[in-house]
Length: 458
Image (tube, rainbow, N blue to C red; front, side, top):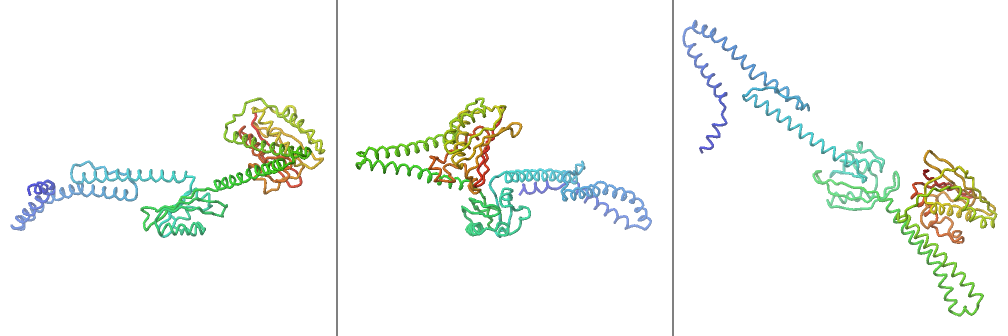
């Protein structure tokens, strides 16, 4: 009980008690004065008037004006101006009120700054994410769409906010998966194909959104289009390499069985079969060697040497290698590279292999009595180029994007006829890229092809 009394006594301030006592005392004096005659009353009024004016002025100065200042500053704070402060330095209750409001303003400003910084960090993280993020509430209204989704699906996150998600992302698979996630409030993973604006495949993870009210969902969209394309290419590569190896192995096994069944007695046929077996084993060896070379280049296990390479001299050597084979079909080989062609720093053996593959292909796919021309020059301040052009059968437009894939062939029958492995252009592309360059192709069916290699100069 004594503790409660002490707390109550401590909560009483002396100024209110003194004010109340003063008012009671004035009221008592007034009663005593007005109990007498009227003259004494007028005298009391005249005597008390200066005290009343002084007391009113004191109340105005000490109470009313500070309260007006406090009210004005409080209104400014309510409008968002938290820089204002109440400059009252008295030690009474009004001073305490002013200091408390100032402290409240400082804490409020600090809290708002912390919230703003946290919001900016979250915004920066969402903007920097490569994955798309879509957040919806329980009514499927859009809460947030990050820039990755905007760029991928060509939509505006700002104009989409508050709209039904189905009016923003018009896709049946996404809609059905989102409905399931909203109803079950459990994590859900789906692969979804989106056809517009460009065909893409997304791995979408739907996760319940905590604190969104009525069970919202956040969907994270990861573009796996390239991964699926690589999976397809890998599957095609395995199928192609299996086919490439199965065909000669089947041929070798068949001829060996024929020889074992008695064909060895016929020397002429036996020699013919052995030559075929030798050719097929050479073909398999070339294929395996090309695969091994491609694997080494792709994995960067082979580091290119840094030699001073004169492209015109390399081209002349390569053309001399193929001149007899080309001459048998009436195909002319010509180098139009000038003697002052810039010297490059590269691995001469690798660059020679690039030119051999390109010239070899140009000859293979040229018509009889055709023409293969090597040309080149400067393409900029820090880059040179050389081209290998023919006037042969050309490449269909739909095949150009895949021409540098492993084991991809435009004319499979003709490739096998000339012993091609389907890896030559893939090797060329990787060698050029290892040297910091690039390769391009231009072709029209029936009018020939032109391969252009760009390489940095010294």
